[in-house]
Length: 420
Image 1 (cartoon, rainbow, N blue to C red):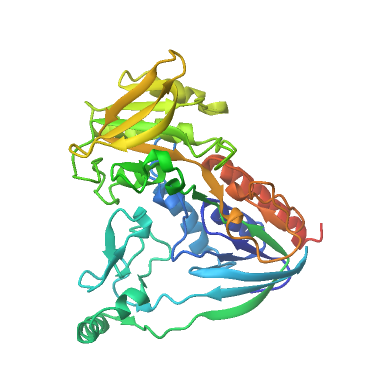
Image 2 (cartoon, rainbow, N blue to C red; image 1 turned 30 degrees about the vertical axis):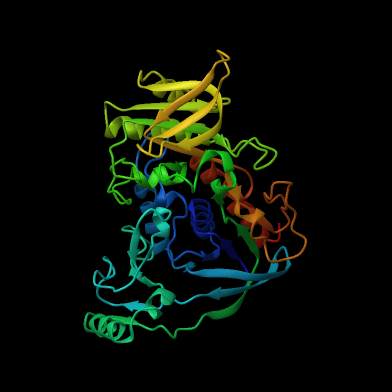
C-alpha cells in the first residue's frame, strides 16, 4: 500500500475525505487516517448546511460510497500519526491504530441496548448519555461498533461477564485486552486536514457557559436541533425541557478578542442565521434575537442573509453582550450589554442563549509531529513544502470552500507524487 504515488491524508472530516477521494480518483494510492472511530468530522454532527438548509448526510454518504468503491483508499479510524520524517516526495510516517475493543459480525446497524455502562455522548457534545458499546452515530462510516474499555472495566465483574456472554451469542465479541498497533508507511506526500475545535467557552468568564445550564454553544445547537440529537430534534432548554420560545444568539463569543481568538472565524454569523431558522421552523411562535458586532455574510451568501432577516421574528441588534447570568427561580438567562446604534443599555431575559464560539485550528493545540512546519500566529498551517494544509487547517472557511480547498490540496499532492 505504501511507496511511490501514495498520499497520506491526516483527518477524516469533510476536507480530508474530499482530498482522499480526489487524489485516489486521479490515480494515487491513499491512506486516510482519522482519530475518531468514524469519518465525517464536524460536518457529521451538523444539522443542516447553509444556504440550502439541507442535511449533511447526503453529501457525506456520496463520498462514503466513493471510498467504498475505490480499492486505492485505505481508511484507518481511531488512528493517529505519531511522527513524519523525510521530505517532499519521500516521507515515512508512523501510524498508531487504537483498538475498537469490539468485533461485530451481526449487528453493526444498532447499539447494544443492554450494555450495563453509560458514558457521556461525545458525538452530542456531552448533552446526553450513550452506551459504552455503541455505533458512533446512525450513518457512521465504518458501520462498526466501538467500545469504551475504561467504562466497561468499571462494571461489576459478574454483570460484565454476563453482558459479554450475551454479546458473544449474538456474534459480537468484546476484547478488553486488545492492544494498539503501530506501523510505518512510506508516502510521497502528506495532506494535513485535522480541522478545528470550537473555542473553549468556559474561558469566557462573563458569558456563563459551564455555569448556567441554559447557555450553550453553536455546535451544541446543531445537535439540539437534529433528530439524532439528545432531544430528538426538540429545541428545549437543558435545565428543564421547556420548549424554547425566546432565544438569544451572542456573536463573536471569544472571537475578535485579543484575550481569546483575535480573528474572525467568518462563518459564525451565517451559522447563527441558519440556527435561527431551526427555531422558527420548530416553533413558529418563537422569536430569535441575534446580538452582533458586525454581521458578516460574505460573497454569495448575501442573499441568504437577506432571506433570514426578512423574518419579522428574527431580530438583529448591533451590540456587544458583556455579561450573562441566570434568574435562580425561573432559570431564564439574562443578557447585559449595549445597543451600539441607540447607545442604550441592553438587559433582557431569554429562555436560552447560544454562544457563537469561533473556529480554533486543531494545529494550534496538536502540532504536526515533524520538524520544519510553519504556522501563523494563530496556529493555522502555512507550510507548503510537501505537507499541504487542507480546509480549516489553513484558515476558517465554510463547507463549500473546504471542498474546493481540499481538491486543491489533492492536486498539490499529485504533483509531489510526480516529482513536480
